[in-house]
Image 1: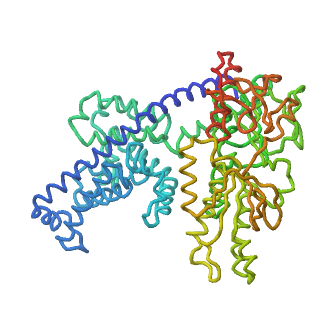
Image 2: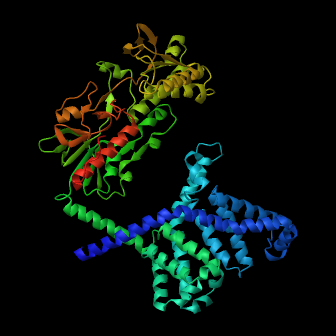
Image 3: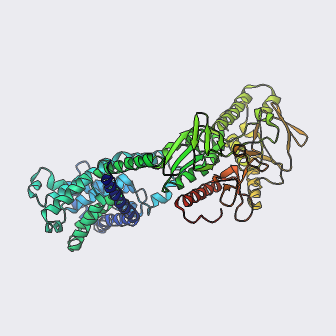
Amino acid sequence: MTAWWRRLLARYGSLATALRATTEAAYPPLDLTVRLALAQPFLASGIIKLASWNSATYLATYVYPVSWLTPHAAATLGVVLELGGAALLAVGLFTRLGGLALLALSVMIRTHYPLAEVTLYWIALSSWFVVFGGGPLSLDRWFARGFEDIAIPFAFWIKRLCRLLTTWLTAPYLLTLRLALAVAMLAIPFPRLADLPGFALWIPPAPAALGMLAVGMQLALALAIAAGFALRLVVVIAILLCGGSGLVVAHPPHIEWAFELALLASRGAGTFSLDRAIGVLLGRAERSRIETAGAAVLPRVVIVGGGFGSIAAARGLRDTPCSVLLVDQHNYHLFQPLLYQVATAGLSPADIATPIRAMFREQENGRVILGQVSAVDTREQCVVLEHGRLHYDHLVIATGARHSYFGHEEWGRFAPGLKGIGDATGIRRRILSAFEAAENTEEPELRDELLTFVVVGGGPTGVELAGAIAELARYGMTREFRIILPDQARIVLIQAGPRILPAFPEPLSAAAHAALATLGVEVLVNQSVSAIDARGATVAGVRLPTRNVFWAAGVAASPAAAWLGVAADAAGRVNVGSDLSVPAHPSILVIGDVAASEAWNGRPVPGLAPAAKQGGQYAARVISARSLGSRPPVPF
């Protein structure tokens, strides 16, 4: 690709990015304005018909007759659709349903009363809300996060259907809208188009202000809209030209015409457009530039790990001139805080695992590498994989933590921990198999052992796991067995310290203790485990017979300190400086569970997802400042 072509594409891309940011920022108030403007005539019509029911029945009899309904029933249905649909659309609650009601009314009015040109705009605008739903300033958007969990029947499938509607209909709808607007604009310099069959019935008239422009300008605007070329810029020009004439105010239908163009600009031209094709070319040009010059000029940042910190660091570098390589032994990002739900059959593993490549599909300077790191060569600045080596200019290590049995690694055979999907599915299998075996055995002692569940460790994982097992036994299986009573299962949570959740404030710890007690969980504090085997555990010298022991008591950092040849704390974490870099190796930053860093109050940063994400974002700022030669950020 020649240099001038690249420069032209780059300038086009910069202009398109600026216009896109501007129109997207204007979309929330625009969406609200259009919804209110579209709902207003229908609300007014419905109120007038209620006030004068004779007029409503007259219209249903002679103007808008419905062959399969009596006039009274048709009038009632029309008023319900007008008032209900307009109200839903105005507040943005079940916006698609409200838009569908107004769409049906608009189509009926158009077929029975063709002279009402404004109905064509109503059809286009109500169709917009059927396809896209309500915008950010709508009740739908505010309630969307919890909609699947409320007690409305088929809530999950309704939300999924709405997503599919948007996915399937966006491209054809935007193409149809563009073509309709373009054909309407072409009818001004070519009036014979209006003689085509169906033109007057289904093509909205363009503002007369466009007729004052030169024919060449009219053609250019219409063809650009039809092809989807520089759409946002063309829309701004068209609206300014028509608004400047004053005719938008004089002819209210043309306000809806401006609304259609503005909404189109906020969404973009869609899949079938020149803008999309140029965007693909821009992406290819950027990738080519990175591949050509990046290896020799741009710094290479290698990020080891696929957790919260790693993802935050990689995303934070998306606008930095560097090449980002994210390395992980799995091709998915795991939402670890919900592992206990998988372990207790509350969620599927697919619900908490997101493909990493999908997360970085749009990040041009990012690349994902599947592999397991075995060492770091700090002298040569290379990360050693099982099948090769990766050179780095900056290295971010966020490999997390693993189980720690405090020197009793043999306990791992009998007390699995919960750190990955394999651990969660294994624990789920053990829990469900224990209930099945208890149902089938005739030995009371064995049944008691199978129905006793011991969780070692009173941190967040232990508390969540114990509570979830109790909920599963007491509420999820109450009527599924005939011999055993699952709600009589014994769940024991063991904590060596004086209270559970020691990293949390004491009132929260007490509240969690009370909640577990309500579920029937026995919480044993100030007691430690001295032995674990296949038949139970010994706690403070007392034997607990059980076939189900789960470990949530301790973690140890991954072997990053050994890779780097630096000192580590008691948990194996790497001691880092105030900028999260390793003092002996400034080009290496360590974040998350594998880093021993201090918070603003001098206390250790907790091993929680929010802290890891903040560490990743901070590491990205450090690397960006170093790459650009700018002032480094304040200490972490």
